Length: 305
Image (cartoon, rainbow, N blue to C red; front, side, top):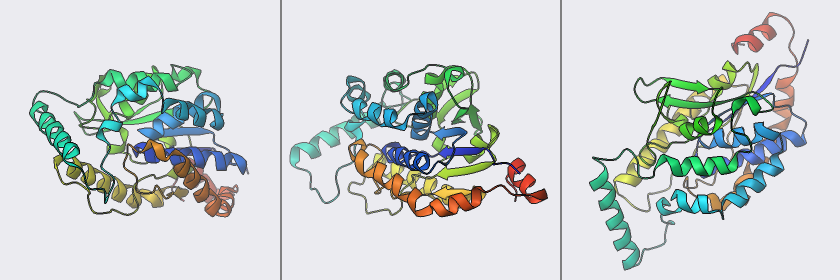
């Protein structure tokens, strides 16, 4: 008997993925090993940062510093933040949003994204302490999707900044990235929780962290942008739930149903990540025990048992 190799699959969800920090912190506190990580979108960002130095406290502080950085302001994330529910816009706010939406629609025939890829790349570059996969301390992979073929793409070698940027390129907001493996976009499109990607790295026991929305509140605004965003969130949540049975442990922290831009909720989201691990720690430990015989081998080798 031996302990299986543990893989952590960190899901997509924008700012909701800050819950990943709490999950990792709680797993470390309970001495649950993390031998390898795969991430989609924000999960790729968190996963790459942690894989670089295995210090979750450093990752958290780096995120907090980012929120007041010029790179974050330049990214335009706050500019697309949804209006807080039940807060009626004044005339100036309404007029500003109307003009902005009109401009977006007018440019939609000529542009592949609202924000240039370089802005996100600079932000991610400021977060990562290393620039290549070879410099990471544990195996790590980014999940992306090829818009040309519809196939999932797993990147685990080469330029780390480029790979994470491709994985986090939200369709419509950011242009897809032309790379050797295709025209790559947000990993959350095909793998909202990249369990298959971490299995490709060699994981035998998969802890999947789903940071999709739990409950969908009425839309505060109704326009093309918010409707498309809501449709994407519903698809991601349904797909994540449908695949949950394939992973050894499925963690779905309360993400406060936050808009993907709400990085200001960092404290609450980290706390929710810790809380969901505390709730399921007995199950994690029980399932992680080595299993003898053919059943154990099948589970470790193929994730079939």
